[in-house]
Length: 413
Image (cartoon, rainbow, N blue to C red):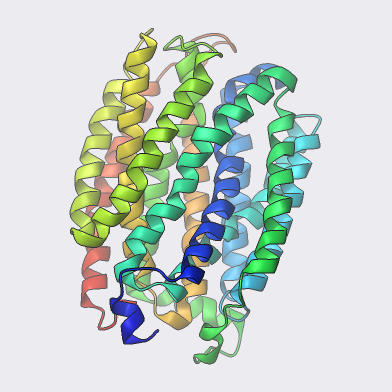
C-alpha cells in the first residue's frame, strides 16, 4: 500500500464495491447466526426442546466454526483471498440449505455444525481483505459499513424471517437465506478481483509452522484473548433474547418483529457514525464508554418483569447501540495487530476463538437459564446479566493493551 493510499480518507470506486460486497456477504452470515435467537421461542416449542438443548443448537455452529478457523489458519495466507472467500461461502450456502430441510433437532444440530465449518471462516477472510485493501485511517469507517450487515439483518432479515416463520414454520427463513447467498456467490465471482499481494511476502514453508508462528507471538496472544472475552461477554444473553422478551416481558409474537426492526434501524443509523467517530477519536475511549453503558443497561433490562412494549423498545435500541459501539472500535484495533504476512492466519485464529468463545457463552447461558416449561418465564436471566457484565468490564483492560500494541507499531497498516 503506497503513501497516497494510506493518507487518503476517501474511497475509490473499486473500494466502495468491495465494501458493498463484504457488507452484503456479512449480512447473510450474520443473519444465519442471529436468526436463531428470534426463532428460539418458536423452535423450542415446535421441536419440544429445553433451554439447554437450544443452547447446544446455537453453540454447535459456533464450536464447529471455531475448529474450522484453527484448521484453516495455517493455509489462510497461502491462497488468493477471493478464492478462499468463494470456497467457504459456497459451503456456507449449502449448509444453510441443510438447516432449511432438517426435519428434527438432531439433524438440525448436524446442519448447524456443517454450516459453521464454512460460515465461521468468512468473517476472518473479510477482515483480512479489509486489512489488505484499506489503511488503518480508513478502517473504522469500513468496519462501520460492514458491521451494518448486523443492523440490516435486524431491519429486514430478522423481522421478515419471523413473519415467514410464523406463517410457514421455522425452516423457511433458512431456505430464504440460502437462496440469497446463492445469488451473492455469483456476484462475488463476477465482480471481486483476485487479492494476492500477501503471496509476495515471505511465508513459512508449511501451514503448521505458519500456525505455530502466529499463535506464539505475545502481541497476537493479547489480541486473541481480548477477542475471546469480548465474544463470551457479548453473546451470552443473545440466544435467549426472544424467549425472555416473550415469556418474561410479555412481548407478543406480533410485536417481536417490530422490536427487531426498529432496533435494527437504530443500529443502521449508529454504525456509520461510530465508524467515522472511531477514525477521528481515540478508539479505546469509545470502546470503554460504550462498555460501561452496556453493562448498566443489560443489568436494568434483565430485572424487568411484564413491561410496556415502548419501554422494552427504547431499552433495546440503546442496548444495541452500545453493544455495536463496542464492536467497531475493538474490531478495528484488532485488525491492526498482525503483520501483513500473518493477517490471514491471525484473522482465522481470531475468528475461531470468537466463534468458540461465543459458543461457550451460549452453553454457559443454557446452564444458567432455567425454564419450567416452554411457556413459563425464564429464571436467572439477571444472574446471566451479572456474569456477562463482569466479563465485559474485564475486556476494557484487554482492549487497552491492544490499543497500546497498535500505537507502538511502526507502520499501522
